[in-house]
Length: 192
Image (cartoon, rainbow, N blue to C red; front, side, top):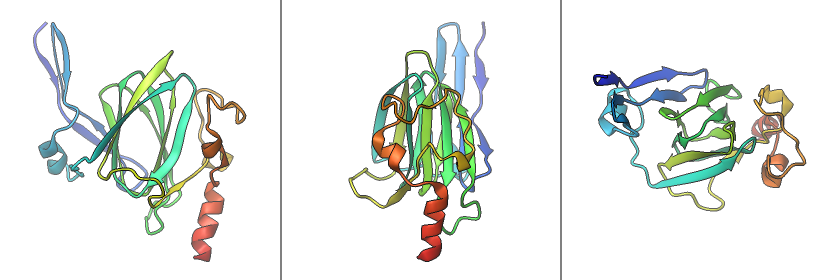
């Protein structure tokens, strides 16, 4: 086997500013090197290059959902092992795509750049667990500005790969289950 290179790629989505990335991969007989982040590639593509202030790694069991959370920070998300079904909802009041929902299957080497105010969530679809990496351009703090939506809102039209039991706390936290529905969030914007 000779060296095979897959170049950096970006793909736009139906949510303004939400971008799916495929980072550069270099394959040879020993395995693969994946560039997780290269500031110059991000800048050349016109994307945020951080600086990243906090990195979190979650280990999530098969079928469990985390989110939908839209803190006031830009996120770069990916998996370092396993596979997840990523879900994004635009909750930015001034966005031309307010209310849009995008889903992205995320495997090792695929990333999503999530603009500030876009809700981010995922379901682990790997057997066993998946490890999901978040890079934040600000440090997370309790009570920081942002939005949250329940992943159980049928109006979002999310076709979760593994059916959800709203009462199963191993699948959906009580906090996420109790978060507002999109219609309630949008009604609150109209009243403001």
